[in-house]
Length: 275
Image 1 (cartoon, rainbow, N blue to C red):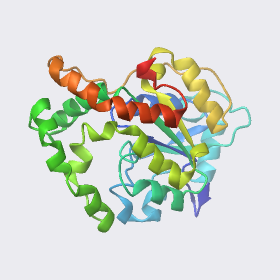
Image 2 (cartoon, helix red, strand yellow):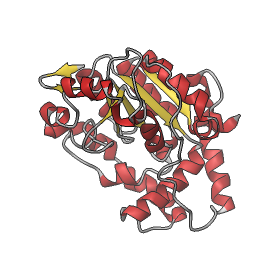
Image 3 (cartoon, one colour):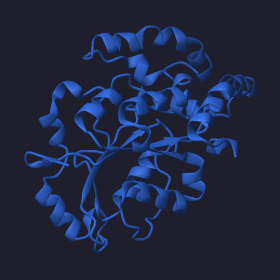
Image 4 (cartoon, helix red, strand yellow):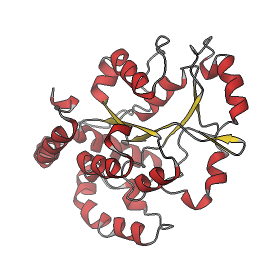
């Protein structure tokens, strides 16, 4: 896709948060036909930056000419040759999956774009997200207390975003530990806008334990040639200060059971953390 002097992305990594999106983005950037956003992987245009406008967004990606030259020279990876594949740009912003307006904006502005989703055990994702937000300074409460506060913090926030698109909600973006794990709801919204066939879901557990077949499946979905494998590394892994409270873990597992059942119906198979 190209507009003016710059490319628009052919695919997006849209989430979920703390599910391995950075690792996936780095692995895909190794492919010589794949060009990441030049100013940082997470552009956040379709969620919190949409007011900047399309020219601002295009400014994050190389021109079509530069992309072709980079691909001919081996792309970002330095690997030789692209087996005839046209260069494709991408970015990775994990709030897109959860933001109530992002799916509609993506469908309207990037028709035909392909979307990659990584999903992790929602119990582990919630705990990891809390540690992440604490490290960034967005959270000061311990995990159990943050879960107690979540419903009150999020009450009405999605509606405010929908009613007033410039509105940015700190709690909706940074305090949805339990709610972001309601994956089937988010995938359904995404599919309603872009179509089920435009979405490829990868289980984080599969991507980290058996990365080669997961990586091949992603390349096949994107229509890119298989040219070997990058050095798979887990990025942004964060040590935890202590194990999760067993009672909290049990409560979260019980909470997610119907959501995981719904997800299994959407996927047509059990999610990776159930196999």
